Image 1 (cartoon, rainbow, N blue to C red):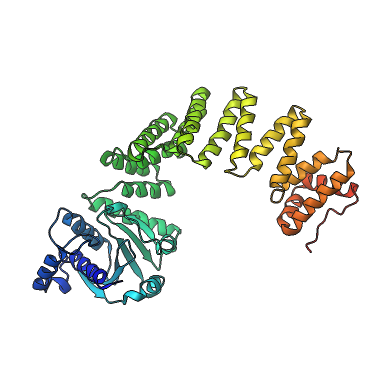
Image 2: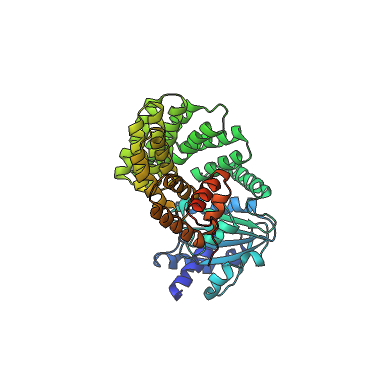
Length: 443
């Protein structure tokens, strides 16, 4: 960090706390005046300049929220997107004391913060991004692992040594914090606050409260695609029976809002619409919806949703008697290779087996064996079962040895076959009849 960057961070720090009754700042008005004037020609500052601006209320409101949440002895860290941060101790209400820290030690110290402090609040500040600001990449893994994210007017991360990440107390603590913020903050609302609050309520089965959180968020942010999507998902998955029509409506709005905001479709919303139509028994509408997704991925590729759509579309085709169209979708899914291939291979093999199509079955099971046999016990067993009727003993022995070679490098392959009595019976019959031991020992 160069001298200008250090001075910039100092200006920012003093600016943030200039309205907080912080003794370190308010007792030096002349110094603050100099800083205020200097900030007007030093560009770019990381956030709020010391001079008055429309954004001043955002930061004042943010600090009021933090003061309502913090306790005596808490640690507050102000962090910029480039990775600089300043540590403060919250000694008593509305009094923040700076903890000096050498800048060259920031990366090292960050990993040990939880060892040094009991409760930590990290605020990421970026005037350009506001509540959508992102933390520095170098700190993101630690933040995701050890902290809960709180979508305040500025992105905030909180950690407490007494809260185990992912525990019931962790989620209850997060719910209480979000509820308190939702009750305090009438200014600078952001959709992520209501999104997270609804998700926490869902986690604890508080369905009506989750719906109210999403609906309140939509009231303030009617064009937010993620709130509509979450509400639509809630209608589909949380109610028994599911509110399918309501789910379709919210997911349709979510998709359109996503297109309006980002210029591309929201595939999970589109997919949920198709699933709801299928559950309603409106198979033609479901088919049209899946095909809409396939048309969209031509312009905005998404291999996962294309694969998932082809698999579900194939199921709809089967229900309407269009077997050939269903088989085509499974073949295209195999070509795409976006998800584990055994699913579609086994679907095709079942079709060929039922139709007694030995030619197609043979070529497909051979391809399945070569493509997936190193990892998938079913690929080995289905091919061995096919080979047992072959008259070419050399071919059988050759492929048994290929499979045993895979087993030597992947012990899970043989153990997977052993775990299924039917599979183990097929494997032992083929190997023993060929004069080969069914057991493989790693060299």
